[in-house]
Amino acid sequence: MKITTAVIAASIGIAVAGLAAPAQAADGYNASIAGQRNYGLLANLSQSSTQTVDIVNLPAGVGLYALNCLVPQDPRSAPTVCDLSKDAAAYLPASGEARATASLPIKVNAEFFGSNPNPVDGDAGGQSVDCRADTGNPRSTTCAVYVLGAGRESANPAYLRVFPTSFLPVKAKRANDRATITLDGSAVTKGAKPKLALDAPESMKVTLASGLAPSISATGCEIKDDTITALSSKGTCIVRITSTGGRNYKPLVTTQVFRLTK
Image (cartoon, rainbow, N blue to C red):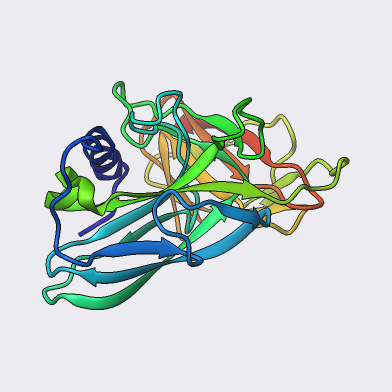
């Protein structure tokens, strides 16, 4: 089953909304992270780290998602701002056989450009999230990792596990990051709006001064395997480049515009 943002959001919405309902799943199922069980705090996390969801007694035919999201004002409502960057939206496919144990790695970032995985109007929008931000309530955290059932089990709250997160501090003064875009081997000048012709894919690479791996998304064109392809012969393509930042660099959110032509 291919992971899609719409399926993720539908699963979260149904599962979180069903928290008050009695949970009925296979006996003994559980998921934990770093030894913490449901609602256990993941404390002293670094800026970016890979955590492992340890799963026991997962029934046949059940898959799982794991996402790091901004906790909504109403903790019982579905989160709408989640980290969908590389390795941050994790998926464990269902198996035809029950599994006594399984593991699901997820990259947990303290800062990310979060998007709504199931936008109503087709535009996911987005906002920068700092999971270190003070909520004003010592009993709540800004972000949490959500583990939930996938597919037909998205309606089963028994598979939902929530892990609040807290992170180590970073340097008070971090450097601004910078993206360099290379199109067919030539660097794109800042402020330029290069042309991109329909049916004429071009190679494109993005590197960051920090050395961090960027997350790249686009509207009006497709980016795959370091190749950018126009989806129309008119209008514009907007490429969004983000990074989760680090101990020495601030997170980056920037865009590059391409003019679409025949």
